[in-house]
Amino acid sequence: MTSVDVVVPVSRGVESAKRCIECVLTSPQLTPFELIVVDDGSPEPELSRWLREQAASGRLTLLVQVQRQGFAAAANRAIALHVDRNLVVLHSDAEVANDWLDRLHAHATKARDVGTVAPFTNRGGVANYPRSTADNAMPEGLDVASLDALFVRANAGEAVPTELSCGPCVYFRRTCLDAIGAFDSGAVGSDYGVEQDFCLRASAAGFRHVLAADTYVWHEGAVAFGADARDLAARAEKALGKLYPHYPAQRAEFEERDPARPLARRVDLLRLAEWPRPLIVFVAHGWGGGIRRHMNDLAAMAGEGCEVLMLQPAADDTVALTWPRKGEGFVAYFRLPRELPALADLLRALGVARIHFHHVHGLPRSVLDLPRSVGVPYDCTLHDYYAICPQYHLVTEDGRYCGEPDAAGCAACLARRPGQWGLDITDWRAALGQLLRGAARVIAPTRDVAQRVARYFPDVSAIVLAHPELPLANLERVTRVSVLGNMSPEKGVRVVAACARDARERGLPLAFRVLGSTTEALPQWPEASLSIHGQYDDNDLAMLLAAERPDVIWFPAQVPETYVYTLTVAMATGVPIVASALGAFPERLAAHARSLLVAWDASPAEWNDALLRAGAAGDVSRLLRPRVAAS
Picture 1 (cartoon, rainbow, N blue to C red):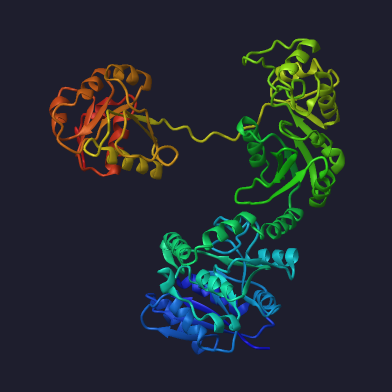
Picture 2 (cartoon, rainbow, N blue to C red; picture 1 turned 135 degrees about the vertical axis):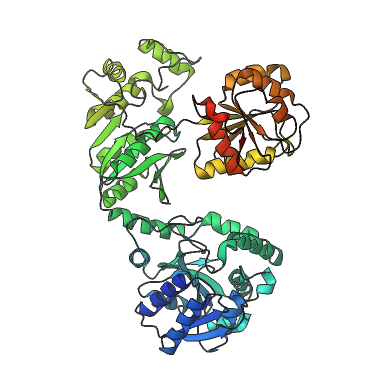
C-alpha cells in the first residue's frame, strides 16, 4: 500500500503542536504514513527544539524554513517532497483519534475522480458539529476519541458530496494535486482560503470533494492563523467571490441545503439514546415568555436528574423536536398526525421516560395522543386556562376578564374568535379534559388556578405547586448615572461609551442613561450598560430627571465649557454631580456640596470609580475629600 504523507505546518503554539503530533503518532492506522512537519520560521525556541528532538529520534521528518513564509508555502514544500504520495494537510492545532487516517484514505480511494476529503470538525470546517455554522465546544462527557467513535458508529463508511473541502484536516489525492498544482496564496491575498481556492480550481477540472461522515477531527482554532482568523476568513471569502463569481451563491445554497445535517443528527440520536440520565419531553407553544422560562428553570434544576427535550410547533401541522441544551444543534421535524408513529418510535428508541405538557397552542390536535403512542406517563402544568378556554386567558376581545359565561356565552365568543382545531367549546373541553384526566399529575401554580379549573373538571385534582425558580443573583445596588443634553465628542460622548463598556467588562454596578441624543452611535444594552432617551424639550428636563431618579448626574466634557445650562437644572435636583475639572465646572460647582471633579482626561476606570463614589448611598462626606479625584 502506498504511504500517505501527513503534513503539519507549524509556526507557533508549542503545546497545541505537541498534542497534534502526539495524537497522529499514537493513533493506530493500517494505512502506512509518514509524518512531515514543517517548522515555518517559528519564533518559539522551545517548539523548534522539541521538533528537532522528535526528528532526531526518527518519529517524524522535519523540514525547516529559516524565515516564516506562511501556511501555503510550508504546505507546498511538504507536498513537493514525495510526488507519488497522497497526503493530508493537518493544522497544528488539530487533534485526531482512532483510525482516522484509514477512514479518510478509504473515502479518497473509492473513486478516481475524488480530489479531496474532509472530516467533521468543531469549527472552521466544511461541516461543523454539533452546530453546522458555529464554533463548537466539546459536548459534555466526551473527548476527541469518544466523539470520533460515535461518528464511526453512526455513519460507518458513509460520505456525502460537498462543494469544496476546507478546515483543520483535508486529504488530497496526488492525481488531483498533479492536475491542479500547489496552493496559491497570492490568488486570495493570504494563506487563509488557499484550500477553498484549490478545491474550486479542482472542481472546474472535474474532481469531486466529499465529506467523510464517519470521521471527526477536533480544532482548537486561532493558533494556526492567530487572533486574526476571523478577519482573514472574511477577506478570503470576498476574494474568492471575485475570483469565482459563482462561488457566493454556491456556498449559500450549500449552507442552506446542509447535506451534513442528517449525518450529524444520527450522532445526536446516538448520544441521546445513551444519555446517562432519563429523558423527558416538554410539550409547549413556541412563544417563549413565562412558560419557556419555567421550562428552562426546570431543566436547569433537574441538573443531574434528567435531560430535557422540547416539542414545539414549527409550521402548519409540523412540530419540531429539539435538544435545548446549550451548544447542541439537534432538531427533528414531524408532520402530525401522519408522522405521529414515526415520532413515537423515535421517542421510544431514545428511551424517553416521561412527557410533560406545558401548553398546546400551535400544535396539531394529534399531539394529545403522543403519551399513549409512546406508552409513557405524562404530566400537565396549567400555566394559564388552556384546558377550559380556547383563548387561554379567559379574555374578551378588548383584553378584559370575560367573567366565565355559560357555554352559550363561550360559543358566542368562539363564533367571533375561533379557537384552534375548529372545536366548539364542548368538544374543546372534552378533549382537554381527557388529557388532564389521563395525566399522572396536573400541576397548578396557585390555588386560584386549581379551583377555577376544578369547576369545569371536578374529577381532576390538581397539585398546587408554585413554579420553582432559580435563586436570584446577588442583587447589588446599581448606581444610575444620567448624562444630560445632546452628546457630541466635545461633550464626552466617547467617554460615555468607553465607561459603559468598562462597567460591563468589569461587572460594575453602573447603569448609564443619556437624557438627550448622541452624534455617534453608542453600544447599548446588552453590549454595554447604557440606554439613550433621545431628544427632549428643555422645559421638560426637570420632570425627566424627577422620573429618572438618578443617583449621579455626570458631565464628562472634553473641552472647557463656558456655562452649561443643564448644570443649573442638575444642581437644583440636589443629586450628586460628577464633572470634568475643566472650564466652568470648578467655578460653578464650588458652592455645590454634593459634587466631585475629575480630571477631564481620566481613564474610563477612573471615571467609573468616581461615579461609584458619588453614588454611594448615605455618605455624602466622601464626595468632599478630595474634591478632585486622583487621576
